Length: 137
Image 1 (cartoon, rainbow, N blue to C red):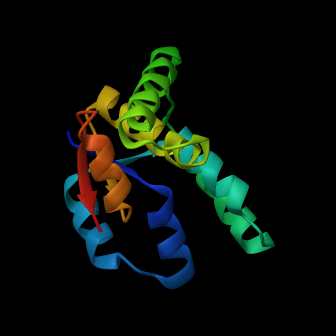
Image 2 (tube, rainbow, N blue to C red; image 1 turned 135 degrees about the vertical axis):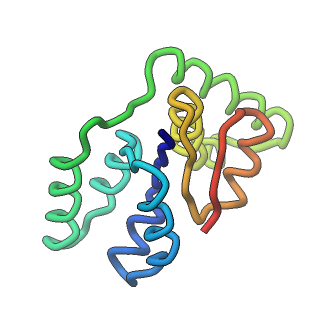
């Protein structure tokens, strides 16, 4: 069985503009979508309207199982982010922006699943340090 983790931007695009319907229809035929605790947290943090909040709460209720990074993933994330910072001269702000994406990539790797994202740039950078599969919308 194949699985996919949808990145935060996919949910936002679908909820706000109904984008990616062809991609989602294709995924439904061949994979089971699992949910990332990191993505659910990002969605909750960004919910600014009652409608958005209801969608996030409803998704959380449906998101079983919900995959989350474990202690080892957090340790690896710190190591990867340090390497990226040293190699690229990036400061805390840029590394902070990447932290959740690193955790999503590590979760995908752990479960052998594919990340579905619109964030090609950041996930391609991460793919040089973390082995995981991605589909770019």
